[in-house]
Image (cartoon, rainbow, N blue to C red):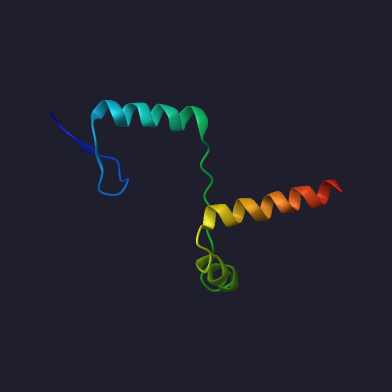
Length: 71
């Protein structure tokens, strides 16, 4: 049996597992990229690097902003 890596740590997955995971991701997730300039956005980069979860932090800030704009 062949195993394929899907860059999720050191865990190896079968071709069927990768296919199922890709299908789930396609149907249930949306990826949004953010490019920051090392010079002009250095303050933002530094602040994000201090966070234990960049994704969690960004989602929290957006939700707080959404809540405050509705009040």
